[in-house]
Length: 242
Image (tube, rainbow, N blue to C red; front, side, top):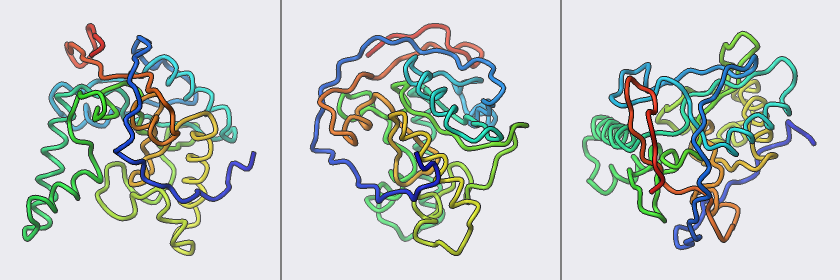
């Protein structure tokens, strides 16, 4: 496969499609040490309450990630920022991003604030057809790194609220940053080749098995529903499927 082929136009999935949600009861698994996977739990490092000190994913999502890793050139690695995200953290982030939008755009109506906020953070929900992707354990935020775990240039920061966060930004601005263009293509092609889908407004966000993924691939069924976890000292003590 051409790992550096251009990123195609990403169509937003129709929210009218309601794939059946039938959780396959896969466990959340903790991402173990790996010479080419580095853990940088951003929300824990930011001190957000109930955030996790490490990364958890559904079992098959974790296996897909390892499969994608094998497609990278030898001198590349993955740096993981977030995986399973407790509802409390999703609620905190939604309020945080919403306030940031208000502060930057004091003339925005409530509807405009909500629309802009939703570009960068999902509404906190455990409803079957509206479940926030990270709450399922089937979403991951990541970037590319070198073999020492240093992040490479992808042309924008994680969680940056700007037009440069859109996955195809450099496809539309080809002369702006050739290194970022190449690295975004590499990340996108490796992840999608093994079955992940990408959220078009965030180059770092990929889904597998959840409702968002099912809509994008026109699947009749989503494999992952919401997961509720009991958090102690920033680790998952136990969890249950909702």
